Length: 88
Image (cartoon, rainbow, N blue to C red; front, side, top):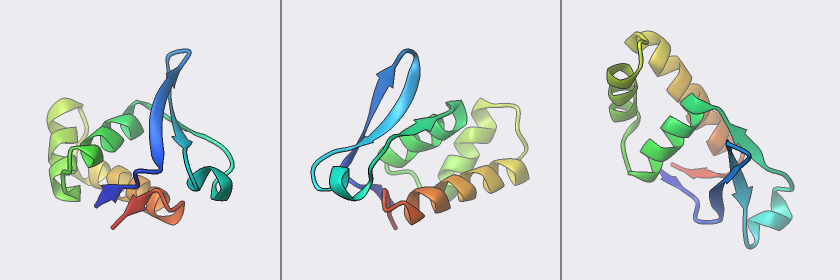
């Protein structure tokens, strides 16, 4: 999995935003605000971690069980993929 190079994150007033650049700015009109968990998952995807590795890292970092972490990671990956931001 790989985040498309046409999307970058920026910090606006303490909030992490995903912003399209280049051709993606024409196709995807808007921005996405990432909450703390989504930013954690985004950063792990940028590092090149697999879904299983992200789940493991999430359970090690936060007080969350593996089942809940798996559901959250899968949901965010699916949303990013549907939006064309994540290349599987």
